[in-house]
Image (cartoon, rainbow, N blue to C red; front, side):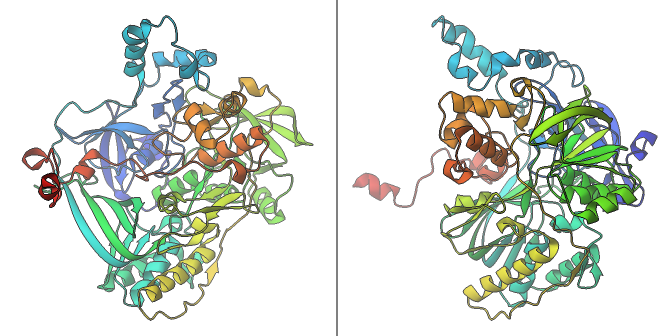
Length: 626
C-alpha cells in the first residue's frame, strides 16, 4: 500500500483485512485497497474524493453515502472480456484483485471535463427547460434537436460485447422472510427461528449487521456490539430452519407476499468458478414478511452541498468503523440532528481533528456540547452553512449565525471534508410496493407505515423508532408475532440491555437559511439529476401542484437512487412553496426495483439457445381455438 493510502487508512481499525492488500485501477491508475473494502472505501483510503461528474451540469462529484442510496459515485467496472457494467455503485461494489473501474460522464478526463461548461450555462437549463425549448424551427426537431438530445442522454456507456456471464433463477417458500440484517432484522430472525419457523434473512450488504457495523462502542446484553453480532450470527447458523443471505437485495414486494430478491453470487470473487452464475433472481413466497430496512440519512440543502468531500455524516462514520478510513484530517460537521455529533466524537477518538460542529438548532443537549469542548471541537449552535469553496474537493465552508430566522455575518472555516446530517427518514420503498398506506407523523416530520395490505410487520427505524435498543426490542417482537401468525408458539421476547446507545433527536428543515440570493444558489436536492431547491420552487410557480407533476417537471427522484436521498427534501420545499402541509402534498410513488438490477438477473436462464422470444401459457392453444 502506498504511503498516500496509509495516511487515510487507520491501522487496526475497521472490519477489513489489513494483511490482504488488493490491487485495482481507477481511470487507468493503479491503487491498492484491502480485502473487505468497497470500491468507494478503497478510493477514499487513497485520498481520492473526486469520483464522477453530474448528469446535467457536469459538476465534480464525490461519494455522498456509503450504501445503495449513493447518487454520485457511479462507475463503469470491468471483470474481463464480456464483463463490463456501467453505473456500478462504488459504495456497493466489493473490491477484488484486478478490478478495473472508470469514471463516467466526462471528456476528456475526470479532472478536466469540457462538459463542465454547462455549469456556467445553468440559466439555460432550468427546471422543465426541455418543455419550453426546441420548439422552433419545427423542422429542426428530427434533424438537429432530437439527435443531439439522444446523444447527450443517459449515464455511462452501454456494453459493446455479449454478456459472458451466466445468471440463475430460483423459487423459494418460507414461513418468515426478514428483509434487512441490522439489529431489528437480526432480532426478528432469531425470535422466529427459535420458534421453529422456516426463516430467510436477506441483506444487500456483504455482511450482516447494519447499524451495528458502525457502532462498535455499543454494548448489547453485556457484550460489545460486534461480539453480540458474532454470537447472533453463530446461533442463526446452528438453526437448520434459518437461511442467512448477504449480498441479496429485496427488489420488489408483490401481491400475496411474493418478494423478488436479487442475489449477487460472484461479483466479489477474483477467480470465478467455472460455470458459476453471476447473480440469482429469487421469487420467494412468504407466509409473513418482516421489513427491517432501517432509515435513510437526509442531506442538508445549502449552496455548494455537492462538492467532493461533502458527504453524509453517517457515511463518514461507516467508512471509519467498517473500513478503517478517515474521510479527512480536519472535517467540519453541519447538522440538524444529534447523530452527527456522535460521528464527530468517533472521528476525534480515532485521531481526526474536527474543526467545528455547526448545528442549525439554537440549543442542543448540554452533554453534547460539553463532550465536544472536552475534545477540543468548536461548537456553533444556532448557525447555518451558506456556501463552500474548492474546485475538485471542498476546502472551506462559509458559516453564518442565525438570528430570528435570518443569516447574519459570515466567516470562513478551512476544512478538508464537510459532513452533513439533516436527520433520518424511514425506508418505506418495499412497503409502498404493496400499496400500503403511509401516515404522516407530525412529531417526527416523516411518513410512517400506515394501513397494511399484506401479512407484514415493519420493525425498528423503518417505523420511526431510533436507537439500537428500540430496534432490537421492536425487531424481536415483530419476529415473534410473525411466527405466531403462521402457527408457531413464540414466547414474549425479553428486552435487550443496551449500553452507550445514541438514539438522538433532531429537526427537519427545508433549505438552510442564507444571506445570499436564493435564485443564484446551487443548493442541490437530487445530486444525480442536478435538481436544486430553486428548481422545485420554479416548478410550483409554473403551475405544478401535484408532487408527481413536480417530480416529472424537475426530474427530482427519477435518478438511479429512486429519490432515496431527495424525495423528502423535495417534498418539504414543494409544500412550503405551495403553502400546504407535507401530507397534503403527498409523496411520490415508489416502484420496483428497489435499486438498479441487471437485465441478466431478470433474464436468468433465458439467454442464448434457451432464450424464448415468445412465451406462452399452457392454455394458450385452447384460448386461440376459442
